[in-house]
Length: 122
Ligand SMILES: [Zn+2]
Image (cartoon, rainbow, N blue to C red; front, side, top):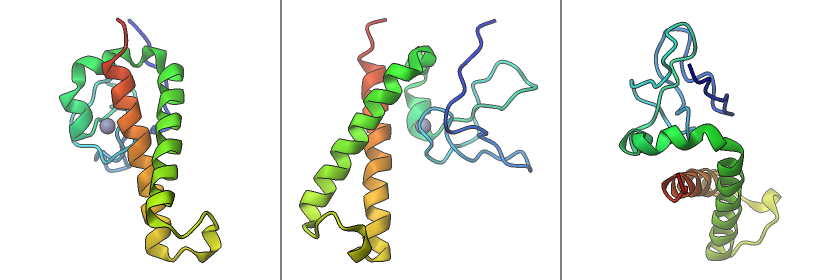
């Protein structure tokens, strides 16, 4: 049996057994896990990653994909800051701007991760 790597998003389940974060991208998971070992973390996925379930198997090279995801997050944050036009000093951001900045990073990472998985050469 192939052992799947741990990600920054485990555990994907709470104490009650309900899905929390997506094993692949960290977004909100739904009730579909991909761990073949019933004793381990269920490795729940989000709706978007379920759609890309075939690509999920490419996650074995996660380190490369994590780097691509980080680059995507950096790009998304830079774009958001430029569009918002309030500079890079976080202390002047209100709560909404702080959340929108993190949202941009989060979505940018997830988007870049999916793109990297979709274009993997295997
Ligand atoms: Zn996901």
